[in-house]
Image (cartoon, rainbow, N blue to C red; front, side):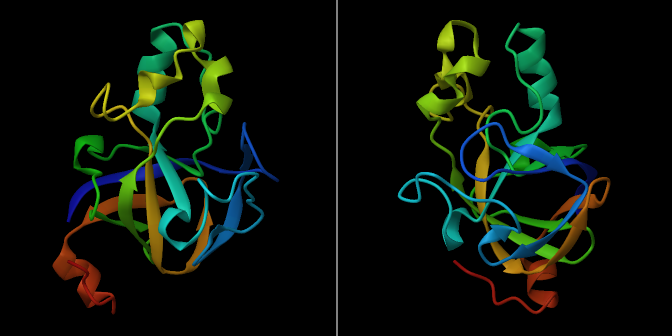
Length: 169
């Protein structure tokens, strides 16, 4: 186990941003219950079921003058206290002690989040332009129920396998 933290906020919307806080939700193979996407070509689906972002990055971006808050740029799960540099494609995350996610990719920032950023510079959260500042997408390997304040930790592939999930290359 590495990097224990907590869920600061769970966020959903009927499509688009901002996503609004919910205190608890069920997580299925397609993401958080009550969450929808306007553009299903670029958002959602099994490989992009859950979007995560770090509260530490949100605070740093706010300190730069951006009008950002949890859920404002479309993340479903806002984390705190985990090593965000370790949240990379193929990393496993255990949320609430039972919901298991596997990071699939970094997100590509979209113009719909531009109003949150100074000068509409939504590329500020682009992994290509600013490594380490991107949100990530994840697939759901083990479904379950989550609440705000639940723990979150990065787990090894071996730990993920012990939870009954076949490891993927």
